[in-house]
Amino acid sequence: TQLLEQSPQFLSIQEGENLTVYCNSSSVFSSLQWYRQEPGEGPVLLVTVVTGGEVKKLKRLTFQFGDARKDSSLHITAAQPGDTGLYLCAGSFNAGGTSYGKLTFGQGTILTVHP
Amino acid sequence: SQTIHQWPATLVQPVGSPLSLECTVEGTSNPNLYWYRQAAGRGLQLLFYSVGIGQISSEVPQNLSASRPQDRQFILSSKKLLLSDSGFYLCALGYQETQYFGPGTRLLVL
Image (tube, rainbow over all chains, first blue to last red; front, side, top):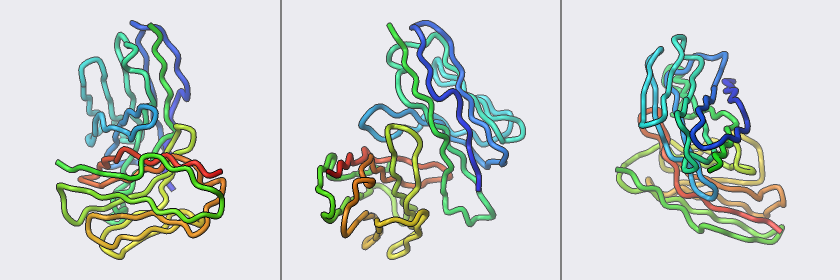
């Protein structure tokens, strides 16, 4: 069974601060996704990383996939109140084509950015 | 691009009543489909997945069931709801090792 440990669980910061969310596992993932979810809505995909060491940027968000493909991080620069929400990491473990596209989710990080 | 529809958006049901939640997708054929439950806005628990019509796999034992009568339709059901069935139910579509989610159904069992 593959597990994803996501930290911190809660993050409350002031507008303009930087933050990093971590996602760690003892398993090697073929790919890893980051989602953002607002209350009462479904998660929205932010990024997919597939190559060890890969770094992707989405405006003020920077995503990194660890070299060994066992961990990932999400860094937000100069956070804004609009960044408030639940951030979820999810890993795909492609076990010889029998995983059926299933994802393993972290428990999420609830981010609150105060104006 | 794929679109995922879920209904109803919100449902309040008494304990012991039946349940039927529907998910339909557009813009793709023969997709992998998934049902998740999310409690208190935290992580997602995979309930069922389907790789084709009539093919259902259950991830956790419970009083819920799923069916896939058509390629782009996925239904979550229960004969008798329990209080513990309350939660936020999400349908997802799998595409290239990534999943895309519908808007969800909020279920409150009283």
